[in-house]
Image (cartoon, rainbow, N blue to C red; front, side, top):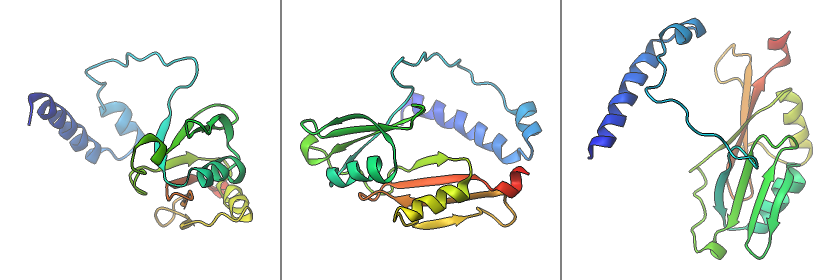
Length: 172
């Protein structure tokens, strides 16, 4: 193991020890130290970040993301076998490629998870199901008494897409 990895591991170990002692938001504000290094990245004008993955069935992923999920299309290039989708406000981008056209293997099903925090989680769940989209893990509280609901679906290529949000009762 090199010195850089060891330094990162030690920094991470200290952070994880601290995190284990945090009980309230006030604890985090009071006891969580700033990073040794400042954030130096000025993000580009086109998008702030993008998740990329490879799929075996490109056509099914295109139809699912655009027509079933309702994402806006940023780029679809059948010659390059690439599709980039976003939400109407361009807050995030998902990009997927046809694996065989890129000489890549499909991204393993649980190698990544796309996660979306949404308003009115219960209504989103109903609308997804009305479109014929089945939840692999139905919306449920992560623990008893939690005001949050979470659940996930899978794209045709098996990529999990988690939806989570607060119930209306918790916002009242």
